[in-house]
Length: 308
Image (tube, rainbow, N blue to C red; front, side, top):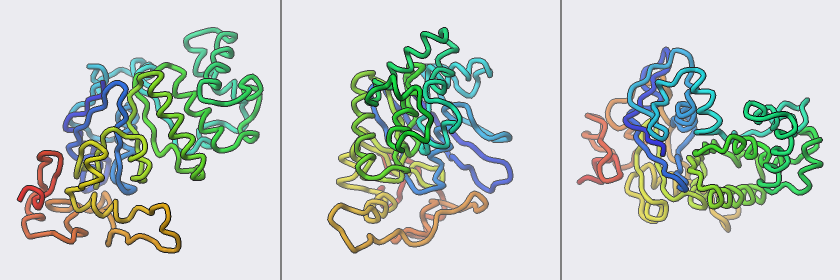
């Protein structure tokens, strides 16, 4: 369904690509995780899939959605692509919905492109029911400030489903929510996938969330994939030092009063060109060969130590 092949994206006035040789796939009825620290290129990848790259961005490689080359679509084709092929679930629902509009009007605006006003309102009510909001007839008449954060995130999910897309791009969809509500949204996304057979690219910095919902995971750092594989296998036996560090830095239930050790150092910014493996300056196992050339992704891992 979604095929990204050797995608590179360089933004204006930067020293290195923000996305560097990324290849990934998402199949129908599959949830694929894209995990990593802030600035690794995860959200930019989602925007690239939607054809929403910043002005002046230079690209190479391919993004194909059901065989269509996203980077070659016309503006009219992109508008349809962003509704019916792929749709985004944003991390901050209050920023995604105008505070001055009723929930029903927000959803109906998306739906009216395909149908009349009365049918759009009926479909809005149906969508709110689909995402588990009780009494959807009442909620379509409400404004965003009358709903909790978890309820608003369900509205954002309903909006993403309005065009019956084949692929959902969930960009940190639970970051603004408490732990209990996070679990509810994860259950909802799993249930929706089972009912609609929609594929999902799930973007997160939280490895525990990825473990709860993803079939496969790509670990991304400085625009490159460091490791990829089935979720259970990758988390049970990480092979890249960056994946190991991320798992060690993930808080666990029961570890009250103690903070897990963070990965030393900081990720490189876009103004810094790092020779060789971008993780080498922070890696406890780095060797001279690590800075000579960036290792290729071989058998699911990009690390000379794993190849040895």
